[in-house]
Length: 594
Image (cartoon, rainbow, N blue to C red; front, top):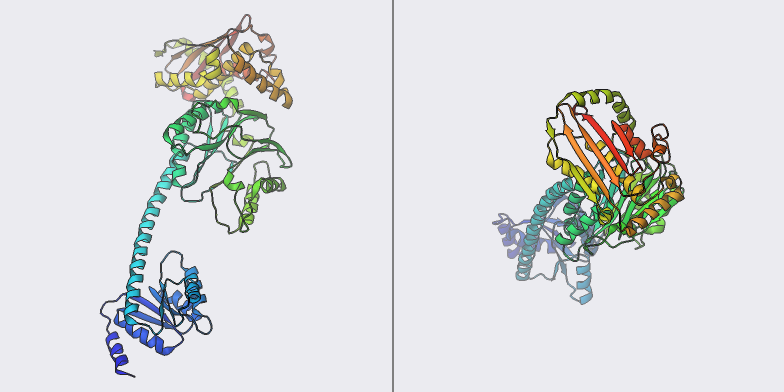
């Protein structure tokens, strides 16, 4: 042993400035000895390996801070060992410095491609080695600072995402049998699913896809969800809600951001759906046994946030449904997802997956099978966009817990008590008479029922039965508009073909409407135990044969006139006046039953 080597060993026995752990990989014991002596003197703890396989084992066990790797070694060479070490560590930066006697460009290229961060030629110059180590340490320390900062940012974003998601979905209705896959490409999702019940128990579902993905794409979700939940609670229709969301996000979001949307309203009697597709894949309506796609509802309008004054009522569609039908919503992230060969999942595969999973019950338990097929196709391919898939079976279990027959039975049992209490008590508060007159323009552009409910709420803090009052006002207004002003015959809705003709004729006649009016008068009196509402609707139409819809002529199973039947059951009295274009309904309630 030379005096120089003895000096190195003596100096290395007491490191003056510990700098971490170094892994030296070389099949030559002399090379390891010399390099170890220098590294110990420099303040490193040194671990030695004789080949690439041993290097991988020591890397896993010792977790070194820097690696010095020879290229040509038995068992496993340095290039392969470096590839495997780098593949094992995706977050932490562990510099690998190759030691080689070859300086040709091919060797250097192979070292870099294998994951090397720098290289030194043999014999190793200690001055160069020291400079390389310092350079790698600066990069490593900087990488660690960036990693630590990213971890803090990720933690803060995780907290923000939790709060953000909770705020957006806070008002969502609890629909038991809705099935949804919401898989964001990043921490924040640009896709958004909103659900709600209207006062009349219609189900509203909105699947939105904002431009891009991540935090920037999710920013529009807050104002959109706020408008959605506020307006569905008041009973507004699809077109009015979309109009308001469109105007709001158009003002708040940058010009290069917009919101594609699939919006579905399922009627409370499970007889029809009203849908609007704005820049999204087809909305699919499947029959109950998944054997047929009954409807493909394609996009008819541009995404929201582009045209500020777009009229969404012009692109709303109505389709009849039967018990057990399924509504399928999806974002383009699902159809455009690719496998490892770069093939898209696509519309054809998606529809095949839906139609081949037929063994399921009427609440849609085969949803997981479709997701499994999708995952099998994509396998380990990286996700490029937010992925959303929603299935809503049209079954009574999804309706809110309001049993109409129970309510009707309740009113029949309590009617005498309500009448007697209303007569004997003096009112504690009288609302001024509210009267609204709707001309042709107003009837084409405004739904008066949410306005009246909202106005009542603002005028009094007293509890009122919003749901029942909403149903009464809605049914009476629809009768006045559809039959009194537009002259539609409800018998048309007795078949699927007639159903479509009914709504088509309604849209055409309402669009062409240029005269006529409806006057609504509402007076509410409050008592200590309840209240009474006098409701009068008068339209400028020619009237109708209201005797056909008397209690003895119509019941809840009839194909037409069920709205009048329901109003009669909820109200104390419903009186039509000649020639049938004026009706007065008296509605009473008891505070104990609110």
